[in-house]
Length: 95
Image (tube, rainbow, N blue to C red; front, side, top):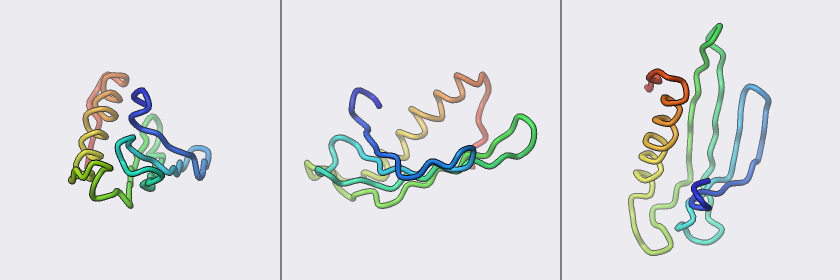
């Protein structure tokens, strides 16, 4: 994604319930991946809960820059969820 700025490898694909990936920013140390888990739960007709859990985020990128966890969180919020709201046409509940 993002012209190679984010890459990943699927670990597990469970139809309609879960996606698990090894996930990384291109500026992270070579071969260093976090674990991304996307879980989907049906809440009835036309409503699904998406849980995003990302662990093993490195403290520093390959250049020594810290706060990688904040970059990941900000990326999910500004790139993924804002885009999803535009596609859906309404605000997404976030908790």
